[in-house]
Length: 172
Image (tube, rainbow, N blue to C red; front, top):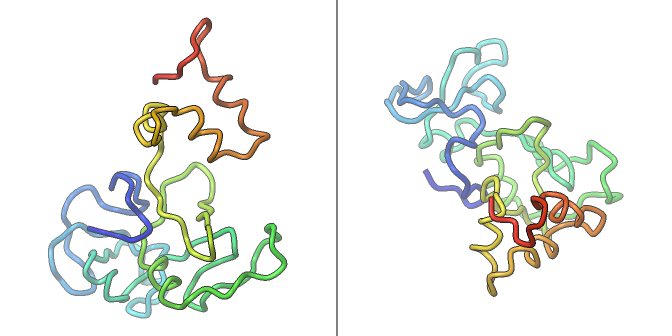
């Protein structure tokens, strides 16, 4: 399964079944997603419980996912302003990008997902990072500098707060 906006581990995809299942839409056996909280015309909202949709049916648009983003809610109606985020009105985003995001699995979170954006496009989810990932993905090997560049200034203290006593490099 490949997605433009999801490059994290598959076990961080919300609603993905661990084992191959029979798709309730096309009847093929494959990795499937639970359809309970998806957008689809194939089943009514009351009839989606216990039904599954495969990757091929997701890519064909036979079901999709809604996403809460920094710009607003992306659902079958497009992009709508739902919450009072930082912007007065959501920017105009190409319809192809909205479709691509709706055909991207949601992320498993403790709280409601908020898909981040940059340059009027949706960011790619790369998974949950540990400190070693910041070091590995830094151009110069300075994981702390990468973390600082990616974090709001008021949260920069989180890096040093995570250091064990008498340590200067966060390794785990």
